[in-house]
Length: 102
Image (cartoon, rainbow, N blue to C red; front, side):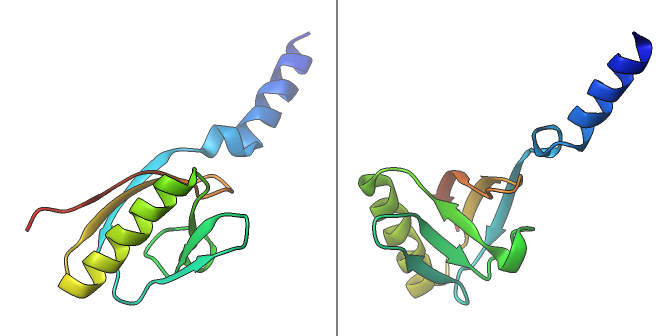
């Protein structure tokens, strides 16, 4: 019985759910690339995120994606920092975003 519990615990510890955490980052997004996939996610590439190629994505509804797009473009134009929280599991999904006060 203990062996089964150990194996289940070990499997959970190695799963992406065990390692998922909300991570916060601040950056001026001047070098970020935004890409909107037809009918899909809005993706920001080359961010300081720990995800592959700095990729973070916004899979929410259209209004949410539009606000994120506007935030990043405004921050690029004004050289202001943005604050983004994302789930650093395999999905790297944005959970929260805002403009940092100067």
